[in-house]
Image (cartoon, rainbow, N blue to C red):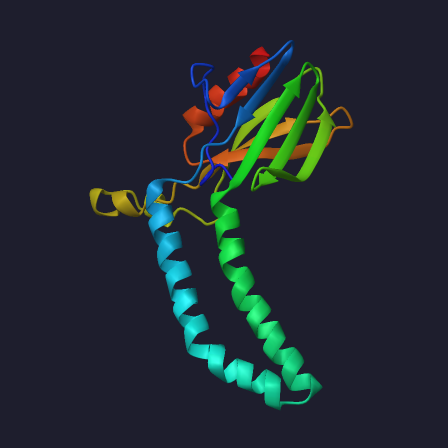
Length: 189
């Protein structure tokens, strides 16, 4: 999620870093304002779609048999849930809560806990940052000045190692420096 929902990388970002007695809570930043403009445009299109299909669907519900009515109600339900699901992306928040050798990852939508996981960290080396490149980097292999803008840099992943030896992905980012700072912040607390 770190490609869209970014974690803070220092304790100076007081609105997104909470330090309690022995625990550290990191909250993701919201989406940039340009995404809100996209969201308003998408919801406007859905509103116009609803206005265009409202009369025929209501006629189908009133004149049709049971299957037609259920199809009409299903369509109206789907159209009405679309804006809610789109708004869910804008009110999504991910939290990392670290207490000594325990880490908890909480996903929230509209401020409500949606999903959470707790892990006991490995005591030796709990955090690692590695590169993920899903495709061969042909532009880098044929490196010249013309191909410089086409080089696939991939992204980087912050992993934790649990006490049981499992590797769990915590965050990902296009900049390794930011993940290294996040890793250092988590290791210090």
